[in-house]
Image (cartoon, rainbow, N blue to C red):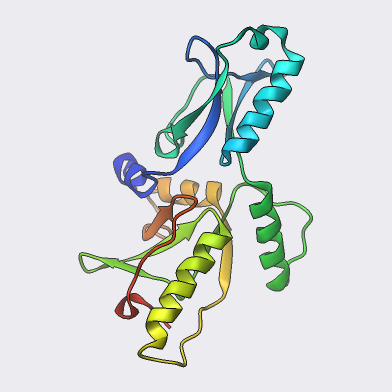
Length: 206
C-alpha cells in the first residue's frame, strides 16, 4: 500500500510523546547499545506519568519546558531515524482486554507482543462501493459500535447478534499494509480511541 494511503487510514489517531524545551523528542538512551528509544503512548496519562518519572531521574528535565505533546500516528509509522527506535506503548487496560479475548479464543498468554487492536466480522463499513473493516484501539469503542449496529439491525432483524471480537497486533497490520505483495489488510481503516462508528443495517455482514 502506498505511504499516502496508509497515512489516510491512520488519520486522526493521536499518540503522546515527551518533548523538551527545544520542541525536540525526549529519547531514552541505552548505555551499552548506544541506541536511543522514543516512547509514544496511546494514553496521555501514561505519557504524563513517564514525564514525571524521567524528571525524577534527570535533573535537567526539571528546569521546565519538558511536556507531553500529541503526535499524529500516521506520521510516526513512516518515521525512520538513524539509531533511534520508536516504541509504541499501548494502554494497559487494552492489553488486559486483548489477553482476555485471546483466552476466550483458546490462546493463553501472559503478555502481548505489541499494541492490541480489535475488530469484528459483524462490522463492515461501506464507502463508494468499497467495504472496509474498522479496527479499534479500544475494545470498548468496538463494543459500543456493535451495540449501536445491533440496535439498528434489530429494528429489521431481531435475530441479529454481534459477532465475536478478534484481536490483532497493530505493528503486524502496519507491516502487512506496507508489504505490497499482500493485500490481507488493504481494507482496514483505523478508528481513533474514544470514537465508535455509525453504520446502518445494510452495511453489516452477518
